[in-house]
Image (cartoon, rainbow, N blue to C red):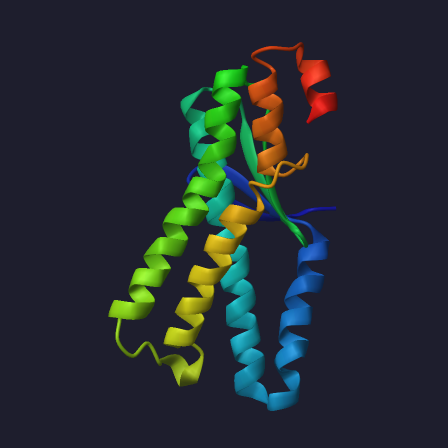
Length: 177
């Protein structure tokens, strides 16, 4: 069963238990170097899940703009997904789908700029550093590009499906995607 985390910007947010496994993995990877490394692992996990949340919020805000019905976001061990009740038409689908990678890119570029012009980020006992901000940039720029691979159900596969739906029936376009 999913764990409810409340709402963010009016969207119900939940977490699948598999995400807790990934969080524990980040913590354990830092465990050999002591408590500060474990703390950095937790902070890095929060950066990763926060980045995924920003990506999913990109989808959710555009889905809300197109009035695609009740919208919810779920984070899981390998990413996240945004659910909405009404299926978008191909044009709406392109916008909704592309909004996630665009949000990731924007966050990545913002973190990259912050890493280079932000000065010394070291705070909170060494848990926050310019290295972490640079990792956030890398994670978001990579995630924004990776999700555009044309493999269903990644965003690139969904973009392929919605694009093909202009020319083929949706079921055929989905099989091709």
